[in-house]
Image 1 (cartoon, rainbow, N blue to C red):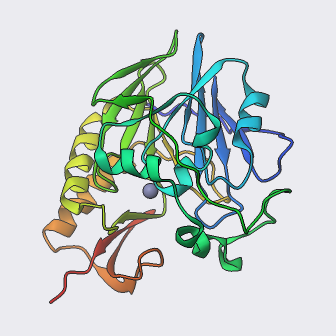
Image 2 (image 1 turned 90 degrees about the horizontal axis):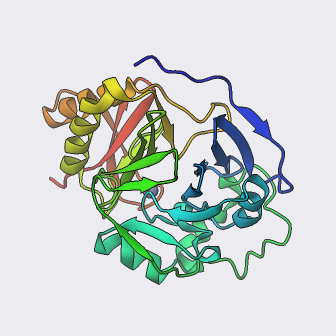
Image 3 (image 1 turned 60 degrees about the vertical axis):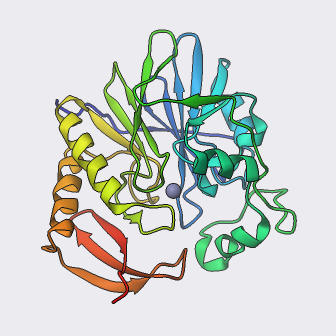
Length: 289
Ligand SMILES: [Zn+2]
């Protein structure tokens, strides 16, 4: 399918921490490119209601931004539950996450400052944190899932339906959302144009590889990818063709035909293999000899 994307329109918000783009009709990307992680949340509007896919890093007030963008009732769907996707969850009443214990427990536990300190170092911040942000009290508050998602479940927004695709690998309960009308695929952390993390303690490279096979099989019917990370130099999209490249990359890693350099993961401090491909790389745990 031919990708149909015009240049996104930047929307001014009262909080400069969030950079908001209208990326297609009824779809807004809410970018936190002031941080090294560059998390992106998406507001997806239908006639009757809207979904907020992820709630960011918890540095700014994402709920206020959402209230500025829509009058619809908004329920949260988490692509998965790493801290940079659930930071504003506690501000919302309805929260859906994939039915997986790892993800549910992350939400219910939240994240303490001890786990987040490294994220606040000067090297990771490219612009001032929002006014009112307090380093000393920062944490991700626990939240309770009000709905547990299943594979291929449809989320009905009225004229627009989002299909839940279970795409484990990065984490066990990672999902993508497929807009069944516009054929945009919201990929979460399963695909973006940077280092893909298949090396975390909860990651599973073989599951990632199966996910890549599955997504590659859907590629002909996908118009564009809407990833959950990016850097400020790029627009929040990637061509769907990258899913085919991801599948090929995983196959080559499995067959030990891909080049890598060894390194240490800045998140876990554990040794990794950094496999580089055009446009993205994949981090896999270094097997201990
Ligand atoms: Zn993640």
